[in-house]
Length: 337
Ligand code: AHM
Ligand code: MG
Image (cartoon, rainbow, N blue to C red; front, top):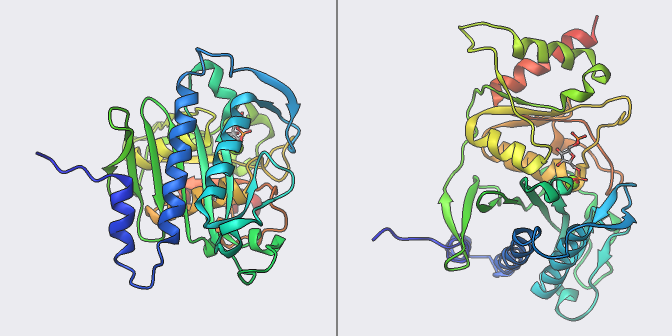
């Protein structure tokens, strides 16, 4: 019989590789897994019950929230608090960071930045959505109040990051800086099981993912790169294929397994890009790099950007090494003429 490794077994095995580990990080991940299963349950029945629909409230980004966003936010906050290993959370759904200052959390060593339900406009049409999480070691001393600085660390300081994709099956993918592993939820036993060990981003790819509806408002280098992707050239296997779901998690997940590039550049309506650095781009860039891909803002490595605000936005380019090199050439060339 094939041996199945569950997420919990996997994190315990990994923990024993670090003799100094206290188990805190494993507990944190364990609770993230529980929250993911709860959100998965609600996402699955979204079409059935009246949890679906708009609340009529706008979130801090001025975007309309849907009920499942709120449910996912509360569920992840509750589980992170319950873990006793997290002392605060910056979430897309909360303007201010949420601090846990009672009980076990007082001695906690980690803070989390998260997008509890990314791509939520896709829920009511049964298209994949995701959760993104970024885990940092706190900088402030344990026992003292957590400060903004704990949440404004650059991506290169991440202790771990990951995402959950609620798709045709539900997967949790994470990295703690030692490669990327993917776990598929087996609904019959209610456990995430290791299904994609050591995921590697193909060096080259044939998929480009970008919202081409914004074409007219893209930087010239991006426009030229899109035309390059569409040209016929047998040697480089062009034209490439255009695939865009509009769920960052799902678009990156597919490209990481098949080879491709994801681009959300600055546009007229979003001059600093649309995606959020601390809870969308940094964690996804961490995963992408850990799998052997590359992620930039078109110029600089995402993980090296110095955050100033937990909700700040950035242009985002992430994908296969060779495709990233090409688009960077286009951006440099057309910027300089
Ligand atoms: P959200 O966090 O409000 O769901 O927005 C983020 C999403 C990403 O998942 C996706 O890649 C992007 O926004 C899609 O934006 P657009 O509809 O402008 O293409
Ligand atoms: Mg989002």
